[in-house]
Amino acid sequence: MKRQLFTADHEAFRETVRTFLAKEVAPHQERWEKDGIVSRDAWRAAGRQGLLGLAVPEEYGGGGNPDFRYSAVLSEEFARAGAAGLAVQLHNDMVGPYLAGLATEEQKRRWLPGFCSGETISAIAMTEPGAGSDLQGIRTTAEDRGDHWLLNGAKTFISNGILADLVVVVARTTPEGGARGLSLLVVERGMPGFERGRNLDKIGQKAQDTAELFFDDVRVPKENLLGEPQGAFGHLMANLPQERLSIAVSAIAAAEHLLEITTRYVKEREAFGRPLAGLQHIRFEIAEMATECAVTRTFIDRCVTDHDRGELDAVHASMAKWWATELQKRVADRCLQLHGGYGYMAEFPVAKAFTDGRIQTIYGGTTEIMKEIIGRSLLS
Image 1 (cartoon, rainbow, N blue to C red):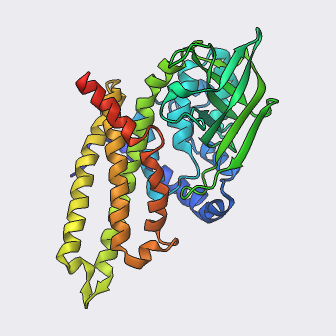
Image 2 (image 1 turned 135 degrees about the vertical axis):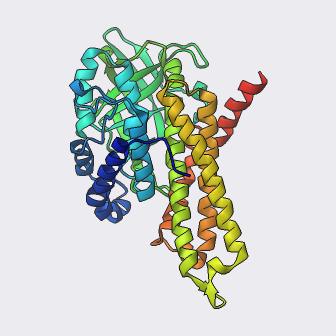
Image 3 (image 1 turned 45 degrees about the horizontal axis):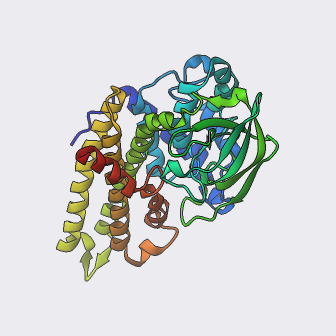
């Protein structure tokens, strides 16, 4: 089925993204995987190419285009290229809305130009050693000291944690428990007491720096409060649907790409004197995955359209996230199996996709949390 989501302008942007990936990412991916981190030069190259801050107003150095379809193109092409290390999706779709939507005019002029040029790399720090999808369990505190906040606590599993120059930290700013009393504070590189732990050794996405962050009496200026005091929970709930949709977009793109790779492989690989594609079981496997991808693609494209209209709610974003990422996981497993022993070799794309994609059902809210959100909406 021909997709109806994109215009000629979106497809022209797709070619720009593909050229960027071929020139600035593909030649360096193996080294980044070994180093466990990408080069800051790649971030600056992305900024020069106009791939950062797509929705940020032009006066701050951004693209000035809130059309989420451009972000979707970016996510799809990065997923197809297996370029998880250069986390522009996190930067644009997950951190960007907080800075562009909640920052004061002074904060925007201070942070957004570097955000868009690639000079300033961003991260968001929600997860803690004892608090993951449940934000009510956050223990990091920020005490009001008049002209500054005194921040103490620890975060973990923070993507861009090593490279980040700006970290949006979710902290408890009142003793009140539960979801209330949380605020967003922007911690900047070099602030005394802000330390990074080790670059965590993951099973996949090796080039993406993921770290522990520690805050020991960090003096955060009052000017670095983002949004409303004690308003973090509301801010997070407002922005999480886009984060989850962004993950879903990359998930279906990755599944479709795996299907393409595997379809080619079974046509070429022979067993028992004929191509694997000649076996009925193989044809059924391909048929099932193709159908699942086609149905999922239709739903995700509809969610992107609804999001651009301001109509995507938390429930449908949760449906998109859990279904598409679980599909990606299933397709990766089945495609690896169809590759046989070669699928288990690290140099084969299907093997990397298998390990890189496994996190998709976990970050941004686990599958179980997504089902809980949907179930509550239907049964409460």
